[in-house]
Every structure is written in C-alpha cells, then in structure tokens.
Length: 284
Image 1 (tube, rainbow, N blue to C red):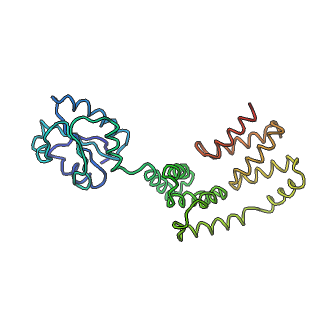
Image 2: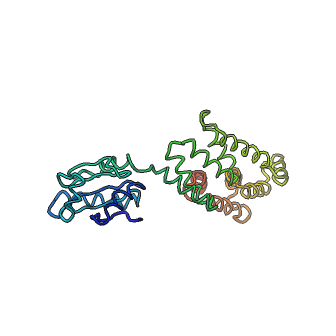
C-alpha cells in the first residue's frame, strides 16, 4: 500500500488499522459532514500526509457511515484523531488542534529525516551509485549532529571517492567510545590512500613547483593531476592562486578547470560553495 491518504471502512479496517500500522504509523481521523471543527482539521491532516509522503498513513473514518467502527474505536466526540502503531493506539487528541501541535505529536512516531536519508543512501550504495549516496550522507551526518554510525558510512564513501582529506576530517571527530572495528578498518584504508596519494607525476610536479612557486604551468598541471585523483581542495587552491595573478591563464583553461571541479563536486557540497565564494570575491 503506497497511498498517503485512504478512507477506512468496515471492509478494509483490518488491512488499514492493523496490518498497515505494523509497517508505519496510521493516523485515524474520525469525522462527520455536520461537524465544523472536522472541516477545519481535515485539510491540515491531508497537507501533512502529503508533505510526509507516506511516512504515515492518514485513514479517514466517517463516523456517520461507519458508526460500528467508530464505536469499536471508542470515539466519544468529533473530530477524534488517534495514532496507531503495531495495531494499538499510542496517541491522539479530540477537537481541532493547530498544525504545530499535530507536527510535534507526529514527530514522536516518525523516523527522523537523517534516518530516511541514511536508508536512501544505503540503497544507492547497494545499487553501486556512490555519487548519489554522497550528498544524502553529507546531509544525514550534519542533520543528525554528526552521529558516529553515519560518520563512518560517510567517511567510507569519501574514501571510495578518494576524498582523503575530507574523510580524515570526519574520522578525526569520532569519539573513542565509537572507535570500533569498522572505524579501525576505515583508518587503515585512509593510511593506504595517503601513502598511495602521490604518483611519480605528481611528485615531479610538486618538486618543480617547490623550486619555482611562480611556475604556473606546473601549478596548472599539478591541479589537473590532483583533480583526476579526487584531491579537489588541493586542485582548487592551486588554480585559485593562478587566477589571483592571471585570470586568463592558458586562454582561460585554469578558470575553466576551476569551474569544472566545482561543478563535479555537486550542488550543496560545502567545498564547492567555499571555492565559489572565493572565485566571486576575486572576480568582483
């Protein structure tokens, strides 16, 4: 059952009120045509049902046409709203209530936004879509207050994407109590990535740049090498240094490379936002 809103009758009551409430909360709205407060409350509940997009099911029960069912639920006045979980009423109220209070009640029984994001990310990872999972894990990590289990999954994806510096930052914040075998495994991966980070080409360009910091050609080539190994921040910093001195370097190639990296990082990436601002400051 994928609906957000259903009418509950004696024919589907077992499925809607019992079976469905084993999978997600069911909010039962008991109403009648003659009841004015019911008409004020129902649009609010419908709006929330659509907004939460199936996290709970809104089951509308007409007390006039389904008197026996309303009686079984112990309804004494209208409107009556009850929350069912695992076939049992766990919460509810009588009379119309403001949206804020209804939200507060629902939030007690609904999965948190970061848990939903985490589930979606895990599904994408299972399908091999690491790029799609990364922004979801970034949001879940931030929204959950940097929860350790989410931090580890986010760091694993960053390591897979070769974003070694970002992964190191995330892992560095994990408290001793949460440094389990998964954490140790990620730290080992991090160390291996750090050791393998500098190819002979990269080392040669680093040496050329160290010998002559104004060698823009080497700086540009090193930035390209960094970006190809997902070392985006180092690449952007090098390109920004070039653009500070010569915005049109190599017929605009440095600026284009900078913009390509920012675009590849994706919308909402904090690193992309940071370097977009830096470029804007240079240009204007």
